[in-house]
Image (cartoon, rainbow, N blue to C red):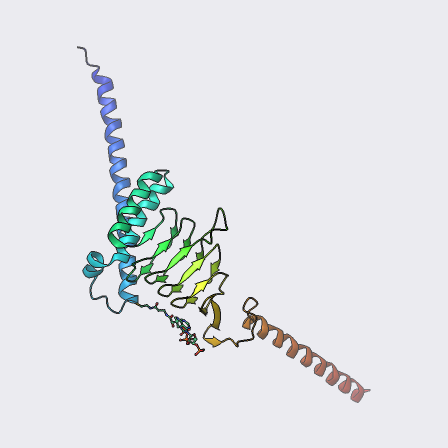
Length: 250
Ligand SMILES: CC(C)(COP(=O)(O)OP(=O)(O)OC[C@H]1O[C@@H](n2cnc3c(N)ncnc32)[C@H](O)[C@@H]1OP(=O)(O)O)[C@@H](O)C(=O)NCCC(=O)NCCS
């Protein structure tokens, strides 16, 4: 047998390069993954008064386990390994009682507290720092195709047992009360309660009963309109003063 030592050396160098690059990518990916998990653990520490230590959250919190499994299943899903992705998500569901479809897009710092019975659909999108309690469904109505699950902004809270159904949007920092069923968009900063969910307050200000729930008043727009009115009145007063001064100097 004849060995081509020149090519052998060249191939060994190429193989070494490839192995080095793969190891570097793997380490970089692992570091990023661990950073994200640490961020989630910190979110539990901040938002769950019952959480006593990072170790407790890492080892014993189903919400964290389900979210971490989703990080893996979502990566597989995006790479087209849909069967493997689904297998990871089903295993996580069997262990945690929380079902997150691998296709769901989830931001940082999601806290799923208690978690049993939570279902998050394929086209659901969740912003950063949201909190979801047990029994929540982010699902479809059965009437939509394509994007058929809700979109949550940042800092949204969905109370225990609440159902958010359809491709609707829950604005930043909105709260959906325990047991509510949201079927329409909920504006940012508002609290919505009941079935179907109705807005009871926006930025802590009570909303009166007869208010149109869809067309919530915009306080910034109202303030600008009243400032516009004041400027108009001041301009008229100034013109009147100018006329009086002109007459006096004639
Ligand atoms: C909605 C919630 C976030 C409170 O938000 P808030 O903006 O502070 O609202 P308030 O407490 O001022 O309540 C506003 C109105 O909504 C009503 N309300 C509050 N929660 C409600 C609910 N779950 N269902 C129906 N009505 C509710 C209040 O009675 C009040 O009605 P009123 O104006 O007639 O008095 C809170 O009640 C809630 O549901 N949190 C969920 C927490 C959870 O799921 N915990 C599980 C832990 S295991």
